[in-house]
Image (cartoon, rainbow, N blue to C red):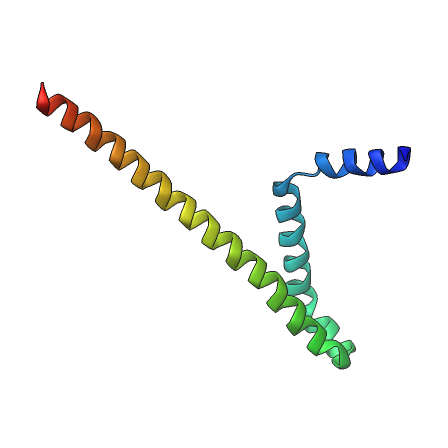
Length: 91
């Protein structure tokens, strides 16, 4: 039971930014090493294509989440300013 608590504590320390950084590093390594490995091992080409699509899909989802968060932040700020402006206009 003690080992389970240690694993949970360790996973809580892993941040999302660390995971994103590791995914970026893996994607960069695959991108840099793609052609040398493709020439040495042409049978693994399909693996790299699938892996690249998987990592690219993760980054696309993260990008969509970031854009949505920015849009929500901008709309909230505009609504706050409009609310302040309307309050001042009624006085």
